[in-house]
Amino acid sequence: MMITTTSTDRLLSSAVVARLDATPHVFIDGTRRATRSGEELPVFDPATGHQIAVAASAGADDIADAVEAARRAFTDPAPWRQMSPLDRGRILHRIGDLIYQYADDFAQLEVVDAGKVLGAARNIDVEFAARAFHYYAGWPTKIVGSTVPVSHPNIHVRTEREPVGVVGAITAWNFPLLLCGWKIGPALASGCTIVLKPSEETPLSALWLAELAIEAGLPPGVLNVVPGTGGTAGQALVTHPGVDKLTFTGSTKVGKRIARQAADTVKRVTLELGGKSANIILPDADVQEAVTGSAGGIFWHSGQTCSAPSRLFVHKDIHDEVVEQLTAIAGQLKIGHGIDEGVDFGPLANGAQLERVRGYVQRAQDEGATIYQGAQLPADLTGHFHSPTIITNVTDDMECAREEIFGPVLVVLAFEHIDEVIERANASDYGLAAGIWTKNVNTAQRMTRRLQAGTVYVNGWGLTDPAAPFGGFHQSGYGRDLGPDSLDGYLETKSVWTCTAEIPLERSEEQ
Ligand code: NDP
Image (tube, rainbow, N blue to C red; front, side):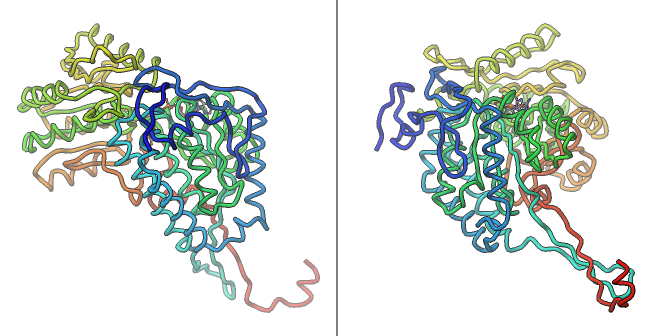
């Protein structure tokens, strides 16, 4: 059934309206609860700027409750510890199925909570969140140790892989549901329990997912979702001595702080941080394909993707042609509320982010760059929209070419030689993704080896799959989300030594 909600003036499903109207709560030990802090946070639709819901804002006591619930659920003989790997996998599959069952509702929720465009929310955010659970459902039965060939006689050594314990997960606002799949999937497959703090901007889908996980058969306390601010709830999770591992997706600035604080209790840490990804179009590339892929990469979700190809290096011979085609695409994007038909370009997350992006563009202009603004913003839009923007006449040392803008702003730089462009592409604090557009496979292969990035795309951009590890070099973070590599972050390795020789009686009495 579709009904109208006055808070958004848009048609939303009854399931979504129920989430928006829910009393502010945290989800701890398998149930909704009011916070002990008594604090609340308004939730806004970025496309209208209107408040659409009120969420709980957890305090340190709430985090402590959640960690305690997660610890209980992790401790033998809790059902989760006793559960067979096959049954753990079955639960993960059921969570994936439930995401699919409510896919259209989740997509709508992400549109109004995170400023998504409906088609992308359904086909990317929701689809790949579900796929992550189905992918990790296959892993519990395949996490194995090994036999170790030690050089001692009569001794057998094997390794076992055990869950690290209680995981604290902190996520960013740009992919609220998707990041749940990236964090919760491998943590559950490994046998860990979790306390997840979503971004204060976008807490709704994670809370719903936690309820569906119970419906899927997950024992209470295994997954706890505690919305709140980074400064309070996030900090409490980072510093809580009962948390064994932190997995974080967010800015490099906050990631560094978390790494420093986690060191006090030697927590294991995975950091997925920012980027300023270099995307290189060689002169032999299919220009139209390269332009379409590059524009899609930077303008998708209004540039609010960590791996956005925000530094475009174009060979000087095709520079003007590429810029012309890019500006044509930027001019044709349909800007609007992501729930409306035909819209392919939505808002930024909030007013502060909009001001931040405007500031970068203004300073680039002040430094002498040329600014092309794309499609006009419709006059009736009240949300936090920034038109798709292309900046040329830029040098590598300018702020807009170095810093992560996290908006729909593409910086275009010309180059002449391959060695030169590789050196310039690598001259960044970040190393999340890189791209090469060329028809020459050998050139692509040689360049791939030399580019310092966690993901390198050849003749494409932005593809993702739960089986392919994702993460950064340099200040884009460490550890990996997705793929088998992600599991390493949630597992400890135990070496088990068994002496097979008979130990003389006198000696064993001495011990
Ligand atoms: P932030 O780093 O500001 O926030 C990320 C999360 O950390 C939020 O939940 C936030 O809470 C919380 N947080 C903030 N301060 C603290 C603190 N002191 N202690 C603990 N937690 C804290 O990032 P954004 O949400 O602004 O997301 C954008 C950034 O995320 C970009 O830099 C982007 O590149 C990066 N990102 C990286 C990805 C990757 O896989 N590499 C993927 C997606 C985004 P609150 O919401 O209350 O501020």
